[in-house]
Structure formats: structure tokens, C-alpha cells
Image 1 (tube, rainbow, N blue to C red):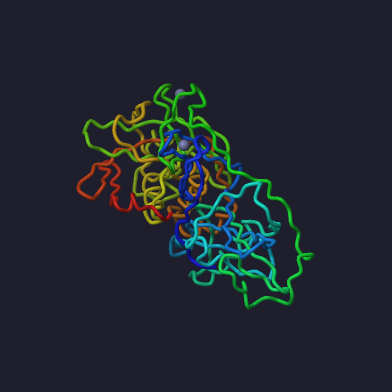
Image 2 (tube, helix red, strand yellow):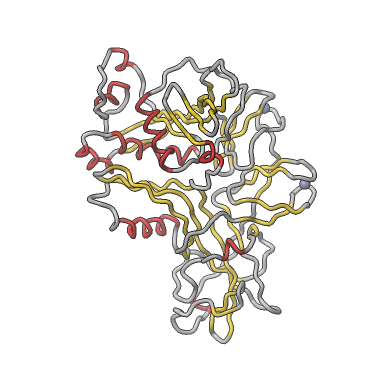
Length: 412
Ligand SMILES: [Zn+2]
Ligand SMILES: [Zn+2]
């Protein structure tokens, strides 16, 4: 397993055929030539192949690897530990192929897998959950004391097929044209493997509002899109578009940047956390429980954009402890906004980390595994940030952020 950086994908515009280079985090494709915008859609994860440089007519074998990037949050008695993961790992048990992709995805542009690609595609037999479980176990020993919870918040999860071929019983790397691994265990016989057509292709669909058919607005890595015609917002989830309720914290000052946050209504079992007064008790906050708190419904809050794990959790816990109560406007902000780049399911995954972050006393953390948090409803709330040079500042909730950190959100 080795660390990798962002990968690039060669593709053609589905409308005019012009060549385009995509990034693995892209969700909306705008063609530079014909200006047509399309969504990139898959029912689960994206699948790529690494182009081969094999000499002559070789029978190519494509071996599958999981690739994932993101942050592993672990709850320990000394607080939440964060670890960036950037990994490729075999998705098929075999000693005859390399353990990881190494640097291949960085040195070469990938292509989307497509059904017309010829070759023998080996069938994965290791689930993404298995790989994550193994990885988590490996890091376990470096953490102090018991680990109450592990939660992986993914930036990207995909499958990459790497090309190989056989030469005198040896597996050859079809990118570098040399023996693939010196750790090979005996002769490689293809009869030992199951091959199957992955039957997958990337889908491009026109970027139009699902309600009124108008052109939709969004950035290349946006997961939520605004229609300015019918004033609606849509959240992409796998191959579906879900209407998203949204609100804005009004602010009279100009030149603000509005950052999106999720307010998440949840059903919680195994813990009595329904109101603001429950929160005051469970987080041991130095506040008086007033009658109004008992009636005030509890919500989790998380950023709806990718940002370093430190700020992601810091803002989520800070806002959740604040329980913002405002007269939200039902309109999108009239000013500059930052795109929604964190999925609703990742935000939901973060809620338990937030709980582990504020739950007191620490002895309560032993019950974390019994506590279930189910998201019920999301409200997207735009909060205004004042820009002062390179710094962004949210006065009301005292959130501070360097603009460079926001622009360079390679992780997460
Ligand atoms: Zn085009
Ligand atoms: Zn519309």
C-alpha cells in the first residue's frame, strides 16, 4: 500500500467528442468546446483502467485494485485521532500480482472502464469493507488505549484495473513491461482465477434541473446543484438526484463567502439525545438548562464541503454544540457560495464521530457501539464568512479558516 495523489482521466465529450481531462473527484463535466454540461453518474463507484504499453498483440489480464482516499477518525480515551488514508490495495486475493498499484495511477492518465475494452477481467473477491477493516486493524496498534469507534470518511473510492500479461508462466506488468512481482508464488495459471465482464460504463446525463429542465449551476466537483429558474436545489447521490431543502443565514454586509453546512435531523437509539437540554447534559456544557431547551429539537451539524479533517470535525462539533437557531432565509445566498463537495452519507458518517467528540464523561464512550444514529432529514444551510485577506471568519459561531486550506482541499 502506498500513498498516491490525485489521478487524471482521459475522456471525450459525450456531445462533440472533444478530448477532455477529468479529475477523479469530478461530478459535473463542462465541455470547453461545445459548452454542454453533463453529470457523471454511476450506480456505485467509478471504475478505471490503466492503459497498457504491452508490445505486439498480448492477451491482457486486468487485475482489480481498490483505491481510496479519505480520513479515518478513531475515538480513543485521549480524544479523536485522525489519519489520512490514500491507498490502493488488491481487491482479489492472489500472491502472483503486486500488492498495490504503486505509482502507476500518477504517472499515467487513466481511462474509464468500458464494455468494449478487450481483455480478461479478473473478478474481485475482497470487498471494500474488508480492505478498510484490514487497514483499520493495522493502525490500531499505534493508538493509545481502547478504540471506541472507527469511522472512515471517504474522499474517493474507486476500482482501478491494471493491465498484465503472461510470459512463460510469469506475470508481466503491461505498463512497464517487466516482471510484475518477485514475490510471486509458483507459476501463474489463469485456470485458478475467475474472470468476468465487469459490465460497467460511466454514464453522462445532461445537466438539467430534474424539476423544470433548465440548465443547472454547479462546479466540477459539486455534489449539489442549484436551479435558478425554479429556485430548487438537488443533491447527487450515486445515480439519483434528491431535492434538497436549503436555507441561508441572512447577512447585510457585502463581499461575504457563503459556506454550506448540513443540519441533520436524526433518530438516535441507545442514547437519550433529542433536545438541546439533552445535549447540555451529555456534553457536560456549562450552561443552565432552561425550559426552552427542553423543547428545542437537537440537530447534528457538519460542513458540506471537503476540508482538512481538523476543520471538518472542529466545525462539526463546534456548530453541533452551538445548535444554531436562526430565522433562516429560504433563498440561496445572493453572494458568492462555495460548492457542496461532501456527500450527505459522509456527513451522516461523521455524526457519530461528533458525538464521540463531545460525549462526557469519557466512560460513556464504551457504549458507542450500541448507539445507532440514523439520518432522517438534511437541511443545507449557507453561513456567511467574512474575508479578511487570506482568512475567512464566521463571526457568530467563531469559525476561522484559511482560504488556501479551502482552495486546496486535496484531502479530504
Ligand atoms: Zn463537447
Ligand atoms: Zn428548475
